[in-house]
Amino acid sequence: MKCPTCKREVDPATAGQKGSFFPFCSDRCKLVDLGRWLDAKYQIPAEISEDDQPAPDDVPRQ
Image 1 (spheres, rainbow, N blue to C red):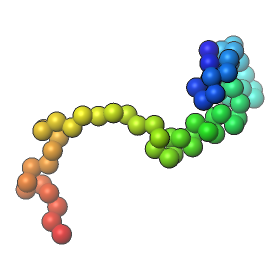
Image 2 (spheres, rainbow, N blue to C red):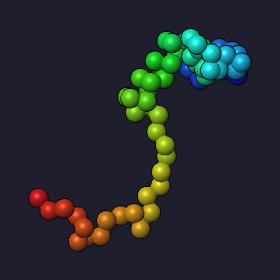
Image 3 (cartoon, one colour):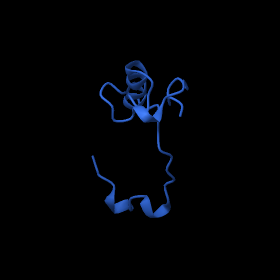
Image 4 (cartoon, rainbow, N blue to C red):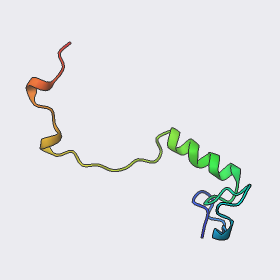
């Protein structure tokens, strides 16, 4: 298996062991991935349909 951040080989047998960063190869790669999530660099694509749009009466007024 490859580290999702740097693509280095990671031994799946280390999963669950003390000091393991699985599926990452190191603490650095784990923190880089966390930073990408927090910076919204990873996004789940979604399509908005007409049913998801608010009705004109549902729009908040200011």
